[in-house]
Length: 146
Ligand SMILES: [Zn+2]
Image 1 (cartoon, rainbow, N blue to C red):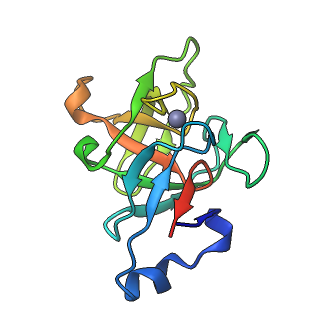
Image 2: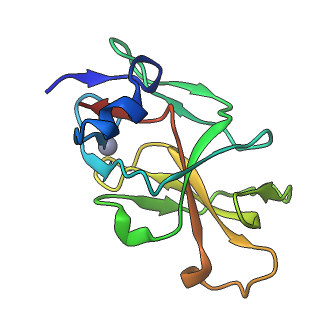
């Protein structure tokens, strides 16, 4: 199964052909399945996101400040995801699709503990409880198995 970068594939076309797309850890030795792409993912643009890794084809992932994320509201949609508590979390609220969230933790691969691949946050109008977390996976952080 070929592994591609998000910039190289047409998700809408693949979906219209009922083609399964699996998002995988960008670290080649790991390659763990993170999540299966679903049209229910809401793609959003964020201009003040924390840095994440950017998948590359032939080299180690690099670091970037990403702008494109999938908002995923249900943690059980993930096959493998870990979280880390960053020492300094930005207080800058992030505008999501349907809420403004404060970043609470960073997303990492649960298999190799590397990342970040995105972040998770709690809507500012909700109680600080893990069940209220919303997940934001950077579109560029994973490889796409098509
Ligand atoms: Zn991994």
